[in-house]
Length: 115
Length: 111
Image 1 (cartoon, rainbow over the protein chains, first blue to last red):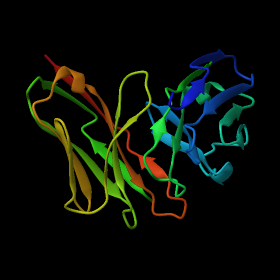
Image 2 (cartoon, rainbow over the protein chains, first blue to last red):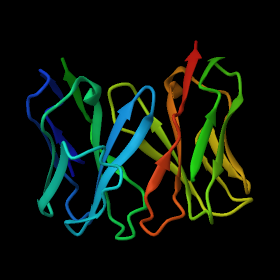
Image 3 (cartoon, rainbow over the protein chains, first blue to last red):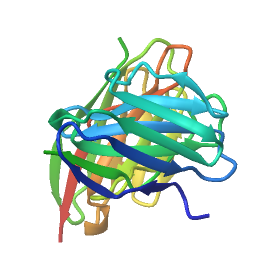
Image 4 (tube, one colour):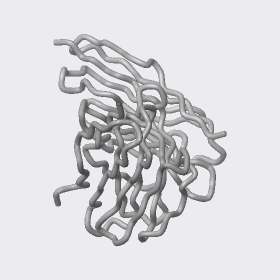
């Protein structure tokens, strides 16, 4: 298996632009997570899905952030409009456990820079 | 509020110099403590899961232990390839079973 695949690996954009990050989880994993990592705050859970359904989105910072999982093999995290404080590395992870807290396999991350 | 605190923030060791990393946690009803390793430019990689006080897990030069309030990651005779950020996480006490991560310990092992 190729693991969790994220794209793009790097994104540089200007304030106000829309950003879409993409994730393909490991086949057969039924839980998917979006995390954000910064030096100041470490890894923060933004949202997690189980069987394509959002279970906990309490970590989504504000209405500018949205996430979807239209099917078991694809998820997107969208920021509209983007702001400089959104600059971070965004990780997608998947897990085979429906309880949501089993061993996570992380992707390589998408580094976002908002100018 | 569930919290995970790791110390030290950074640690520099000489090759072969053993040491320990600490993870203290506050959670209502521990349902799992996880250790991950993160290399620069990569996502975290799973190392261990511990579930109950007194439990220990080992992998090569790493051994993780758990008490009711903290976990230690012991590194015996480290090598330069052990250099990485080590992250600790706990399952939160709420209904959604999500993982709460500490900010990590950056370990540098010099030859």
